[in-house]
Picture 1 (cartoon, rainbow, N blue to C red):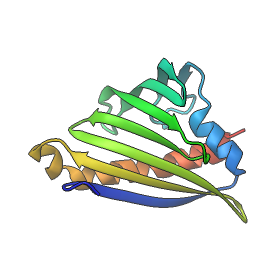
Picture 2 (cartoon, one colour; picture 1 turned 90 degrees about the horizontal axis):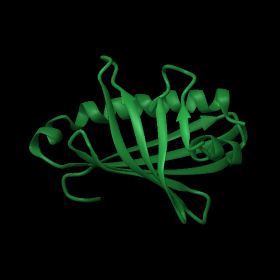
Picture 3 (cartoon, rainbow, N blue to C red; picture 1 turned 45 degrees about the vertical axis):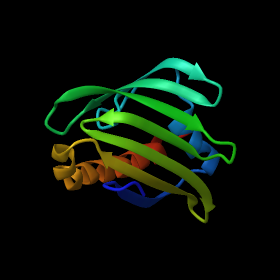
Length: 149
């Protein structure tokens, strides 16, 4: 762990097979618009295709309605896992790592997010950022379970 960083580690259960869960998270059209207003990001635009993923422009809404956009890099790993790297998000550098495993009820999705504050103000918001992200991942897993192919 990088000094000053903090980690979110979640294991979520999704009643869909692992390949469907991975597809929902990674097989995006070039301009994705969420149908569910709770889904975040609510829009994902592929700005460039890479040999092992994509560069993305993602559009988000905070609970208070504030909208913002981020640059992200989606990387697909040979072992079936994937990452989203966010070089700068509201004062944080973020690396989200995802792994699926078969489970008796479908899939165990493991999410490991490393948040590195880029300034003292962001460090002071670490607990709030972790809470928002944790709630967001849980909501995304619910939507994935409902909508995955």
